[in-house]
Amino acid sequence: MTGAVSPGEDGRIRGRCRKCMLEDWDDKTLHEKILRTVEQMDPDVRAEEAVYQARLEHCRSCDKLLAGMCRVCGCFVEVRAANKNSRCPGEHHHW
Image (cartoon, rainbow, N blue to C red; front, side, top):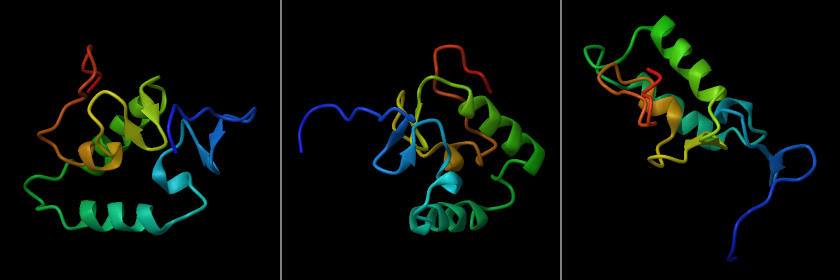
């Protein structure tokens, strides 16, 4: 398949919400893998839960979020936000 993927009237792309995190998808397989990745992070590297959730809230409101991925860098935001040494790759570094 070539070309850009356009959302439907409800903002969803192939059953996935454009402004949702992976946890919001109908297909939980990828989200489960992402959660395992986050859970297996070294505690010295992993952000505190409150920081992690605040970062995800910033991502949810960002126009660069597309189906759980950052359009600036291509990362899964749920993994990037979990690393306490990471920062938002956007121009204004929201976190």
